[in-house]
Length: 203
View 1 (cartoon, one colour):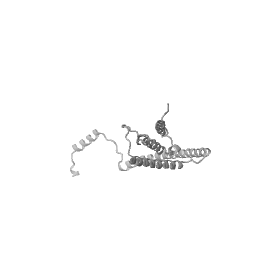
View 2 (cartoon, rainbow, N blue to C red; view 1 turned 135 degrees about the vertical axis):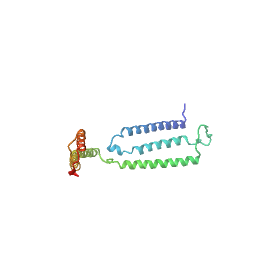
View 3 (cartoon, rainbow, N blue to C red; view 1 turned 30 degrees about the horizontal axis):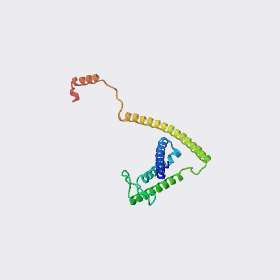
View 4 (cartoon, rainbow, N blue to C red; view 1 turned 45 degrees about the vertical axis):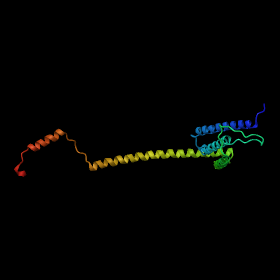
């Protein structure tokens, strides 16, 4: 049984589209799994790369579904299918050029970001040495941070002590401490004062 070349081509395109969709899903999964890491992983152009893969998939999907039926030779009758809604020749060509332009722009964008990655053109030994230097620098900064945190705590304690001393001194100046007198004592003193006859000499 001879298989039509067009059928073989269609099967190959369908397989490629399925594979491309799986690659996009894998890229998204890898991006999510590595999102917590920093360093070189943070500079990888995951998002533009995923957009490029999706754009590539969308382009092939459009070319596969929106084209019109074309006979292989002059003697063959043009096929037709009521379930297929193809674009006109002018619209198909315009969209094809627009998709191609977007693919080129996104490809250049990804290539520029890859070229800008740190250590792309370095050997493995150079990258390991760079990582060791960055690790040593990180440890030095962490040690400096611990010293500054201890100094901050010491200064905070001194500040709290000064505030307490100032508050205590202010209370002594503006609010002198008076001996506590009970309410009953105040009432008895008031009664004695009211019941004491007034001396004429005091007038």
